[in-house]
Amino acid sequence: MDVTEQRAVGVDGYAESVVVSACELADVVAVSGWTPEAVDDTLEAVEVLAAALASAVGGALAPVAAAVAEARARLAADADPNSAGDGGPAAPIPDAAVSRRPVPQARRRGLGPGYRGIPQAR
Image (tube, rainbow, N blue to C red):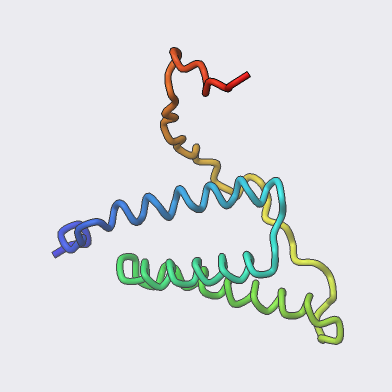
């Protein structure tokens, strides 16, 4: 039995919502930047997703777990000025490495062209 036969009902919807959320997060942080809480939550999400995907692809995601651990160590070193780290900032992720998948926009529902506003007493 291969992975596609074992697929649970609704998994595709959850996976799509993860992609949409990740794209929206990338768009927001490109403008406003990261907070420490957002970085921690995002690393946690990457860790959970890598562990969940490990059942489908085996050990191919071991570098992801190692990268998350390294990112946490760098953040801890940056937060503690007395640490034995190199003290330099973590290397930024190049723009080419970030996927720019278009984010689907919700269909706008308005009141229509005949709506003229709320009448006001004069």
